[in-house]
Image 1 (tube, rainbow, N blue to C red):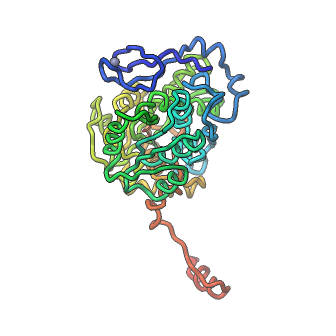
Image 2 (cartoon, rainbow, N blue to C red):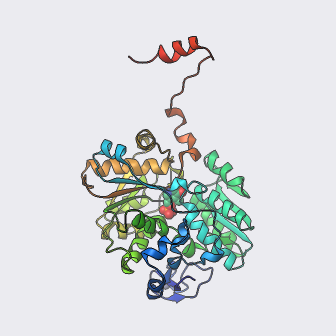
Length: 409
Ligand SMILES: *Cc1c(COP(=O)(O)O)cnc(C)c1O
Ligand SMILES: [Zn+2]
């Protein structure tokens, strides 16, 4: 069983029972799950983790839902591999890629939704819903199907086709004429008089805990230690804060010796409120209206922006604003060197990594992990006019003429 102690307000520290609530009644601060770490320590060791299932649920002692009743379509335990080709290109000798595009619906959002859906069943909701920038839509619809729940997925109408169809196959998708922040506001209003589990609104304290499992996996896959650097694509900032929280919990439990990871923010120039705040020395990101091809990162009012800036500063991390035209370049670089086709958010991460290496913010021998959070097959629009193919007639003559004849010798 999980070791949840309470929900606690991140601002004033008031405690609340485990319910489908997300803001503090007194100060409107966000609520976060707090664990009894002594109890967790009794049931959790490197060995017990390794004896667990090959999914994120092997870390169930530090998740706010029960493994036995988990809505589990196989999220987590994605590959972490040494990226020697890309490392050589960038002058990094100790570079790792965490490929979360390998999750069941091809993004890290399966981790957060697996926890939120399990909790939704536990709270006896019959409808699961979300406001999504894209990947959350597919993850919510898929887990809703697995849990036999009604699904209501709300997304901006200008989203990539791969994300719309990839969610609609599982359940009900509603396209909203507006940007993500409009969709999110609509969902908050809808939630006021309907008893629905909105995974990223009233279930947010539980949902966001799912992202910690990336931190746990990094530590386990690196041989039980935290890396020197982690580069994270930031939208609301939830993933960024939770990867760090996961590593901190492992350090507190003695599962790793310490957590000295420097946390680096990566955002596209068309939506960079969090990175801009850090670079300009502000604590609170100023809201922006997003205009970026990295649609999964297009959150203009980032709920966890303040906490992300704080963590990047406290860990000696950094922030990079990636110019829009360098997003596709990052996608191509990862594909050509490591054989991984990432989405636009991954392009942002790889281009940010390139800058950090070039400016010696990351030193060549430091252990560095770049988080790849989604697949390029859902964002074909972003790259379609930048890849080349040739068409021939089904004859040797045509092949010789068009392929061999045009080859540069
Ligand atoms: C949702 C998402 C993120 C970041 O999300 P946060 O809101 O910052 O937790 C990063 N990459 C991809 C591909 C996403 O879908
Ligand atoms: Zn409070």
